[in-house]
Image 1 (cartoon, rainbow, N blue to C red):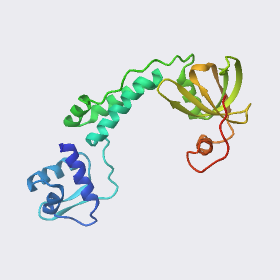
Image 2 (image 1 turned 90 degrees about the vertical axis):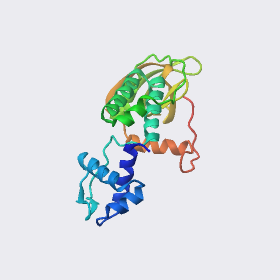
Image 3 (image 1 turned 45 degrees about the horizontal axis):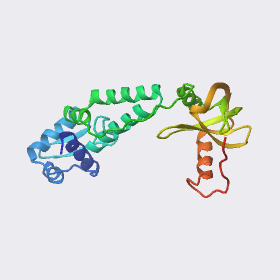
Image 4 (image 1 turned 45 degrees about the vertical axis):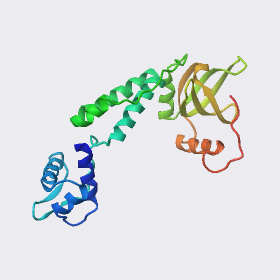
Length: 236
């Protein structure tokens, strides 16, 4: 067990007690020596944990203390690395860069032992064929965030061009394609639009009629991802 994991375990044990608990009991529950326990208490206090007490009197963690973001288990570190590497390979350029930046910020505040685990992660993401998008996919994500209508020029499955005004609320990332999920004003229903078939996309200043969380919930129902629903989503 790394030192960071040991400190995390100690915090979890302290959270279970409302009254001061002896250092000996804490040492027994965390599986360390009394001397190591005292050092770990001092380390947590130095990192901002509001732990009151002293040897011989017992210790108590005051309510309200939030675990510092630098405290990750080894599996959490692996999940972060794998997730950022997946995004870097399969998301659009802006999101891929953001994933790398986020991981770098996390690495900057990690303790040395966990930073080494992050740098040495052996979980890899395989190569993927680039998606030939004609638009900047970050524009779609912006429309989703701000709940704005999108005016699309779209090439359908038959090769014909169609104009749509849609309410975008989700973006799916698959192995070789990305899919915009939206409510289509023309079809009066949910539709899926492959981003590599979107020739043009313009964000409207107009907000769409329902919150994206509501649209997402209704769409999930049509896909049987949740309560059963008889409606089916048609093709674009």
